[in-house]
Amino acid sequence: MKYLFVHQNYPGQFLHIVRHLVAQKRHDVVFISEPNQNHIEGVRKVVYKPTRTPLPDIHRSAQEFEGAMLRAEAVAVAAETIKKLGYTPDIVIGHHGWGELLNLRDVWPGVPVLGYFEFYYRLANSDVDFDPEFAMPSWDFPRVRAKNGINLLALELNGRGQTPTKFQHSTYPEWARKQISLLEEGANLDICKPDPAARRAPFTLGDITVSPKEKLVTYVVRDLEPYRGFHVMMRALPHLLKARRDVRVILIGGDSVSYGAHPPNGGTWKQLMLNELGDAIDLKRVHFPGRVAYEDFVRLLQRSDAHVYLSYPFVASWSLREALAMGCAVVGSDTPTVTEFIADGRNGVLVPFLEPKKIAQGIEAVLEDGALNKRIRTAARAFAEKHLDLKVYLQNYEALIEAVAKGG
Image 1: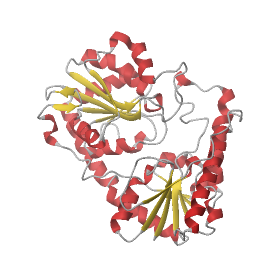
Image 2: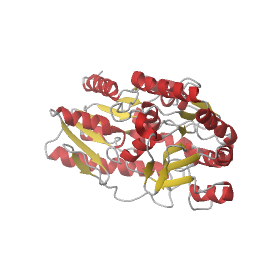
Image 3: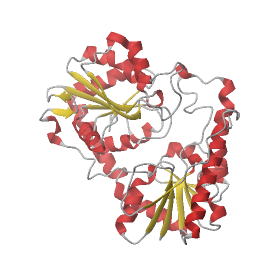
Image 4: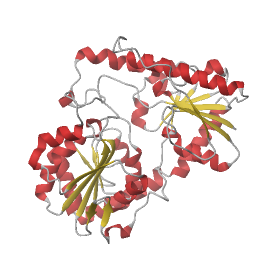
């Protein structure tokens, strides 16, 4: 088959399926993306670049929509180029979040589209109104509603959609859900697996060394920000460090913002929280290595004694799936979509997102109760083997592609 993938940050959510298709050595795979350094052998990458950024005097609620239209236009130009070179895909697979797919049916009328529907924004019972510390003023509500303009146009394309969790599926209007298939993502269980030997020798990451006698608490996100509970995690640390003198904490993540807003007065969320907590955080026991290589991420979680995953009601990170696959003792927030993956006391421990002291107590329980720790680790791996096997995910993905390609 001839595949065309589209994602502004190649390869995005399509890493595993693209690698899988290339490995079969019977498909022609082209990927349209904005420029980056990522490379997959066997994939032809076609680069696009919008002609400009949204104009500064555009209404603030319409800026994201204008950006989507500029992307849609630029992607269509790139598509017209490869069409003139003789390439017509059997199926287009892409992410609807940035508007990139919106004009492709004008380039290839009748070619089936399978779009990734990640999230439908709502003002109530969602990420927007979850955290009272960052309550959204009513004058900003129109901007949130306008974010769904791209979603709604994408749903009008009459293509098929996919989304990875029940919670994300539930955010869409009822009339749209029948158009969107639930395709649960997985983890590579051959790479993401427990390593019983990880605690027998000192663990090193850069200039950080953790001895086998110390308890290692881990926290991993793309960026250190409130959407992934960085602020409440930091406020939990004084309680934890006081209760356990043998604890070391490693917090992985960049200083940018992937979701939500930057700090109101500039700077980074990390610096804001360090300023707030001051001497209550012992920086000899709390470490911020930034972003790390994937191999180091795997080694870190295999060594972890307690892994913390916190999130607003929002999309689930791949790192949560991978942590479960590695048999981590996960302390997770009692929020969707986390509760789709963790059952309290069975394959992890759930804690209230907005209560730092209870987060600390949840971590302490996992560190102190050896029977609990062993039980949830074993169950975490078993859950991953039953629900998160990458091989099963890829089989289901291929079945969905085949159905969409045939017009199903």
